Amino acid sequence: MQMSPIIISMKTASAAIAFTFLLGIFVARWVVNIKSEKAKMVLDGILTLPLVLPPTVVGFLLLIIFGVNRPIGKFLLEFLGVKIVFSWPATVIAAVVISFPLMYRSARGAFEQIDPDLVMAAKTLGMSERKIFWRITMPLALPGVAGGGILAFARGLGEFGATAMIAGNIAHETRTLPLAIYTEVAAGNMEAASYYVIIVMSISFLVVALTNYFSLKERKYLK
Amino acid sequence: MGLLVEIKKKLKGFSLDVSFSIDGEYLGILGPSGSGKSMTLKCIAGVETPDEGRIVLNGKVLFDSEKKINLIPQERNIGYLFQNYALFPHMTVEENIGLGLKLPKIEKKRKVKEMIESFRLQGLESKYPNQLSGGQQQRVALARCIVYKPDILMLDEPFSALDSHLKDQLQMEILALLKLYEGEVLVVSHNRDEIYKFCKKLVVLDQGKSILFGETKDIFRQPRLHSAARIVGCKNISRCEIISAYSVRAVDWGLILNTEHPVPDRTKYLGIQAHDFHLLKTSPDAGIARQNNVIKCQIEKIVEGELEYNIYFRNKEFADANGNSVLLYKVRKELWDNRQNKGDVYLRIPEKSILLLE
Image 1 (tube, each protein chain N blue to C red):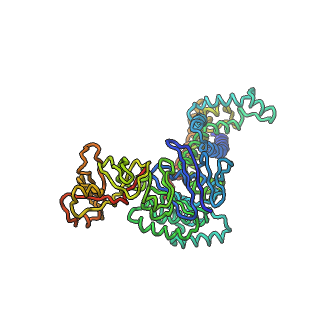
Image 2: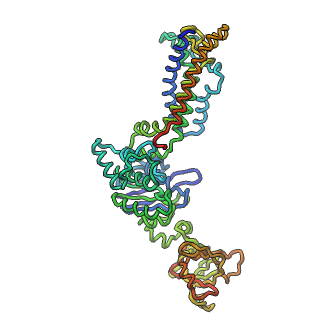
Image 3: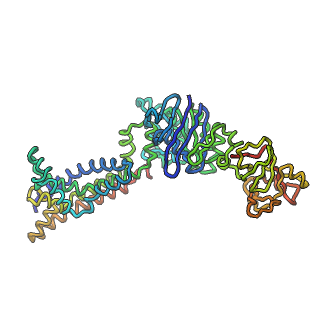
């Protein structure tokens, strides 16, 4: 068993959740405040798509966007000297795209269940929009937002299909735990694979336990 | 000074068209559920935007569609007591009251303490809203509005969420607490009793339109409009035909009634409040009965209430089986139980009690 897949996976999942968490909250806020029901529905569909598409399809689409012969990939390579595909950042991009819908949907649900009267009351009390967000909206949405973050982290950690498509399976570089498991099994090393499996299972169990802790944790004000 | 509201807004199912102005008195907005009462308050508070019109509070223009003025709620300085109180559930009583205050810490603390004492919330400072009774929650919400010194206080159905056996006491309490506040007060309710007790002026809303505006007592005494009469609680309303300057025919009851004042040409309905009938002691002879607005009653049903009977009856001498509508007479129990004439019941409709309605 090598340490590098564990380290790469943790790095990837941590970097991915940082992006996903903020992006998910931001986009959820934005969608909740959209007035037109139609626009909301279309947008929601697009934003949820990565959750329902096969990860290989998402990976394929990402290849089309970031491939070195494609406009965006070419631009990044020629002007910024950054090669995305088959490099570590690609594992993060894959994890972000795949885990984003979980974060977004949880956050959106959490924002939508807040009584609109509370926000209206805060406005009539003269609170600024920023203060309302930090003192009213976020604290009330926190259980849902945190739960979404944990789920998104777990999903990012387990990402396989899209990662394989856009980041490849390069040892010590883009080989995350799920890819390492696949590689070991393909090579007939069941024992090495089982270590990785145990590690993934432990992390996942911890995550589920944390989720339950957050959702069941007694809030003083809910007594 | 005062509040002027003239607004229109298209909504699902109906359109809001409200206008009134007040000048220091307590104003009530009375209307059935779904008549646009809360929406009117929300437009004044600025959390909803009317399509057109004007809202001016103490000389400050809050909204003017022509001049393209639309202040955000934060700039309007309006106290809004929500129907469900809208207390922040994750904050204690103290935090709820102090949250909107923009004062230095020490001063804020002093101010909050002062409010907690005035509103008799001592000992509850660090409780969360869900640990409080309905009445306590309401006092917190009111304190939260008043501490902010709003130019106007708007109460949305202030008593609908309270247990009925506490209502009377809490109404008195709130009235006393409102004395702490010097400014305009606007009360929205579907409860006639509350409005009558609280408010000197009254706006009657029906399907989004402000159909009447004036002194509360005047409107309850003479609602003038068919729909307003229903809203202020007139149970007996009949279509009517004008016979002469001082007499009308109540079509649904088969009666010819004399009136106190000349009948306006636009009169289409007439109403009589359930309490306004006079129970006659003796049976009058037919001729006198006809001249004196007397009905010979055919009693359909008697429902016993706590203090009075609700007596449902028809005009016995009206032969039209389909058109003969039921009337309601409310009478104190002892008056009814001790009546001398136990045979046919005769009720007189006093001329001055007849409501002539458009």
